[in-house]
Image (tube, rainbow, N blue to C red; front, side, top):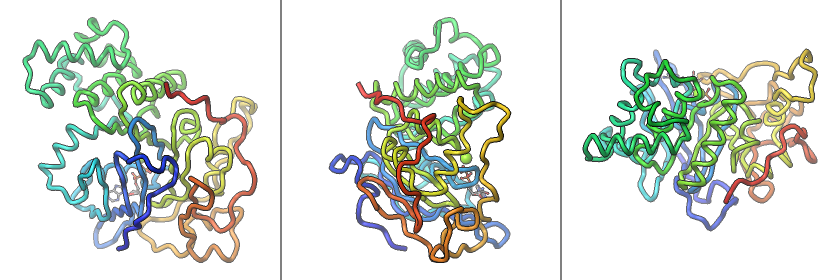
Length: 350
Ligand code: ADP
Ligand code: MG
């Protein structure tokens, strides 16, 4: 295995990354077959920034972040490097990993209804989380829990504290999950499809909350989604994954001004647009991602790619072709390519 010595991208060069992931590979062994779910993934997460990891289902997004959290089953083998503030996470013992997971990196998942205990009040659940991270008494922990509910902007936090999960809406439950994830003051918050189950309005509110938290607390956020439109609206940087590999990576503004990888372009075209009549079919990308247990020759997107030529039977390397913009493609999309409906919004930094 080779470790690339240079930084994963030039954007924000000079600023120390909080988390530096290099050449991360995750391979599952299942009944003698090897499933290569992440293949040489590299990226930086910078303090107080939001990185979006985007790709179709099965592209290796969850597996990548679960590897960072030590949350993969024993059938997974992880190689490469992930350094969080000078500490290597790959290869940590379970006990040490639990400490990192509890205190430095937290994760929020898609389904808050299933992650919360239906028989306990939300306040009691947050108190429990606070007390696993701090040795403080019940009363203080309860005060901290109410503070956390305020932090995630849950209306009437004192009242909600005593309620049970079923008494809250989906959006409120996700706010509670975020409060629980913040109980340890993590440096990195990972939201894995955390807004996917919510309606569009609530989804936007939760995304606004994550953006706001990263600005107010300086927490770095890794946001995982299959929805490139969400990344365009909220993330600072975007990493596009396909078949376990990073295929395009850039700052959000640069990426959407100059989409290069035909796969990213296809994801953009699959975004529902307000301007489009509701009966018009969305462009869905034809075909399927490759089977991760099969060996891939050449570019993994080649069988589905409208721009594929003979050269694509040789795998293109992920290279920085333009300042701060990396992509793995022999025949990149020329010119400016973002449809106007997904223009990135104004910078939200204070
Ligand atoms: P997504 O991008 O949708 O989050 P995942 O990271 O969950 O994708 O999965 C990437 C690939 O890894 C998929 O092909 C999936 O089948 C495989 N995979 C995930 N978890 C396991 C597991 N526990 N055992 C075997 N294969 C797995
Ligand atoms: Mg996933």
